[in-house]
Length: 103
Image (cartoon, rainbow, N blue to C red; front, side, top):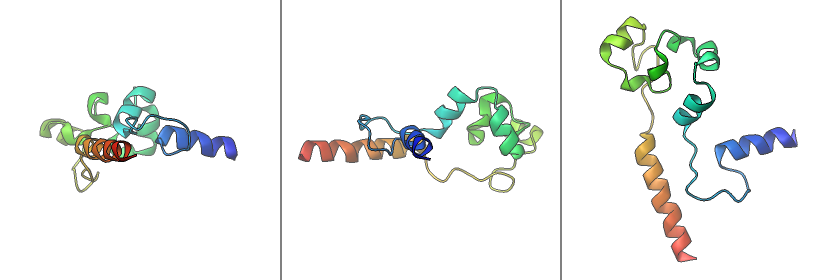
């Protein structure tokens, strides 16, 4: 139990380890790095199983023709993104930097 919890905290960047503040978890990059062929993702998110690997972890960037041929309807068969990862990363970095400067 303790080993699994620590592993998840390390991957999520939320543990008590000495990770630098600029290491912010990105689920898109994690998927591309650790599931490049999409085997795991396609098994557990079958609504994306027909998407080309290039768009598997970011279907909202796929052209309409690719979405249509893959039977993906954003907002209906698969949700639209909740946040903009790039913008939220920048916001988090600004917040972390301001805390570091104030100490």
